[in-house]
Image (cartoon, rainbow, N blue to C red):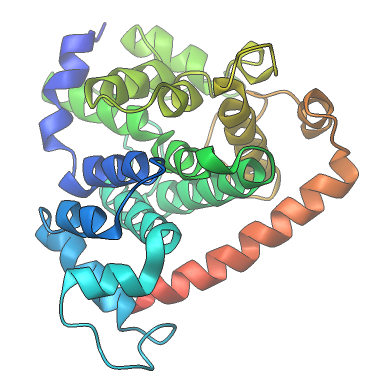
Length: 288
């Protein structure tokens, strides 16, 4: 079965609304003159996101003061970075609700991998190019949206499950089965949403070693590099996706591209992700 761009775009409307909302908020937060009131107005277009943001703002980490009664005050309390993280976590949870039947991935696996990749990519880019940290987080959350789109498009056309042969890398198997891989499918969706090129590239080039290289004029490369290193680190830590082991250069080779020492950077990266996962899980528990 060969899926086309039209097939991928046809399932876009079936994706949870919070997925696209999250991407739009991440884009808005990149703007130098962004107002949190603008962010609140965007969030209010989604009833689920509005409810969960209010719950999170009134939870144990933030709810010690007077409770927030509206989205505007909740956004002011949480701040842009925390709003971005919370909406991303909600999007990851909703995207993975049904799992990925063809990929053999549960909803919990998809959610946890997305969050760890997002937090890792954000932490890495914050050190090198802070302006693009929200886009790095978004790319980590959305790097598997193409898998969701391929699954839904295939099910719409009556596709049956085909097991991936042991040892075959995921992108190769996806291309054999559908004619395109999940990175390409994700880029089709994100481009249709008119998201920043740096974010689209982080998803489109997530398995492309060349895209991670810091060539002159390539600002996209830092997000691609961060997504690859975060995904590779998550995989080595036991939070990977089936078929992706071996899809990236080693952590050592990726670190060399940015003049980093893997023996120092990767432990710091793992510790930062673990700490932020624990914090985000507390917020998500309040916003469940």
